[in-house]
Image (cartoon, rainbow, N blue to C red):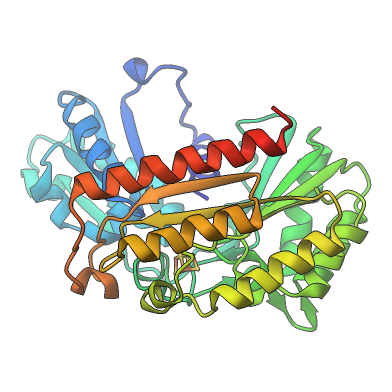
Length: 363
Ligand code: SF4
């Protein structure tokens, strides 16, 4: 999602007469388009901003910007502007304003700080800028935000509730990308399979995309188990341009932890889904996300997650160590595991997944 947002920012700035540099050393303006999902990502951004102090205009965009708002200026005075994900369309005018201020000797330091974090949604036209980093593949956002409120997740707080883009606008964006020589598409959303526009659900959108001339293949990220069903799996099987793969985050193999995470399904329900996916999409790949070290996770809970990994046989898993995020429900629970315990579980489950992946690859 952030890769696509960065393209949108570049496209908007190009449209306003700015030039995207090959090297940050040549840039007059450096914009950090940030993620708040894990603390580690935030720490890296603060450290990188520290390395840019000097004559450049520094902007903080994305989820950290939404989260910190004007407090970002206290955290690092080198930052000149802060723009939340719903406000990225304002970046060209903010820069024009800051550059004009830069030429005025009368303005005090405070006037040189701008923050825009109040918008509830972004105007659809921002998606139609033409900048694409990859000339053969394009990311296309179909929905924004999330209303699931998983207890550990900051996304609903920084990206707002789930909103769906109009299907006609999504198709128009894809047609424009195809017209510029792109042949592969990834549909993006925090919860793509909840997509719904009028009478059309996610399957309707997939069918329309599949029928587009010039498109060779497409896929989507990310699906939520509670919105997955057999009709969805049959669409993956039946639409010939749609990749036969599914990323279905499970997060934990313990019902007790799933409940604390507010994920909305049990292990039994998740296993029933993966069984029907395997049965319907024969030979399709299956990947997942796992969080280890969630508050109160015992060795027994962790072993249940390992058992689920073995049971399902994921082709790959993206495994993360829990870190509390501000405002979330789980941040009110004591972060009960030490960093060493989290690292130990992280290593053990990574080794297990490596074994499973290698076995599935026939190594
Ligand atoms: S589904 Fe849960 S983890 Fe995914 S973005 Fe929404 S709240 Fe976050």
